[in-house]
Length: 350
Ligand SMILES: NC(=O)c1ccc[n+]([C@@H]2O[C@H](COP(=O)([O-])OP(=O)(O)OC[C@H]3O[C@@H](n4cnc5c(N)ncnc54)[C@H](O)[C@@H]3O)[C@@H](O)[C@H]2O)c1
Image (cartoon, rainbow, N blue to C red; front, top):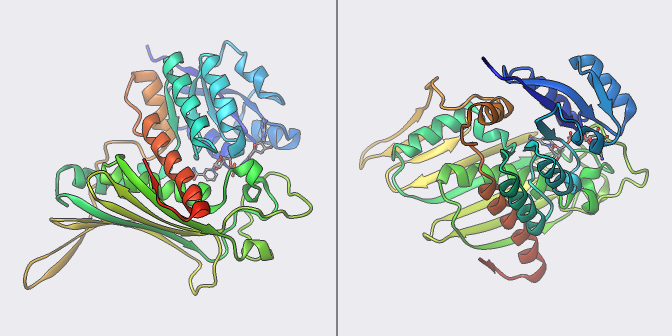
């Protein structure tokens, strides 16, 4: 008989907490029994909308419940490590929002806690689960690109600062700005597609230009705004990651910039047999006389397109998480290294 796991969503009234609640409804193995939310109004509204019986103001009350075996964490970044470690120590399986933590030391604490507790831990890198990312990954694993020697990843938003004055734009709550918000997605996906988490060094530069002037608000998120509209994080970052096998990755991200288009993002991967791009998923090849581009349309994906559906399969059926904790740890190290390199002007070696 199929076992149904009791689930709690921490930060359940926020923008992404609501997405978690919707996603868990797609899994045959999950039943959300409670959420934790400091905003009573958002918590009650989420419970009503998704038919969740209980809302706790204090997440620790949720962690004490014996009828919950699984929690997802959709909290401001500064709380990820503390709550994830406590949840794992309480014996829960944990699906943690990106970024894993706000520093490498905290990320290491989470990975160690998951090992000690022998529970499933996965950081919710949703982009890996998109059909186009899966199409490209399948093709790369078949060797179609050959050896990948370089990748380029970018995300340029014209007016996409989540919300000026929310926790996203305050370093003490978010850890950082666009690197933590968008860079983490691209780094994770690029390394995953390259199949390469063996870092040699990182060179990075971060700065703020528009957010500090109050320009570029994207109006995302549900949390309260600081009346001073504090913005003390970066709204632009570039980085060059070098791998042990001499491959390179160039990353460029902006939250807000003067540009013609609203937003654009992508990853290109250059191999010695072909190149791949995302998204949409395409493969580019050429001979001496002809260049061709093929758009990938395969509809058979190895993983569900919803990360939480996959996560519940890992909990219920013992599948291996597509996003491994050790990989998220490497991504966290790169994020830290980008800031260190920007501050010191030097390359950070592993
Ligand atoms: N995967 C993605 O594509 C994606 C997109 C956006 C955000 N995120 C991540 O999701 C997380 C949440 O972001 P968001 O956009 O939902 O933010 P949000 O501000 O909309 O929601 C956060 C919620 O947490 C609640 N909260 C704060 N402290 C709490 C506590 N101690 N106990 C219980 N509830 C508490 C807040 O009241 C709020 O409702 C962040 O880590 C963010 O980086 C992921």
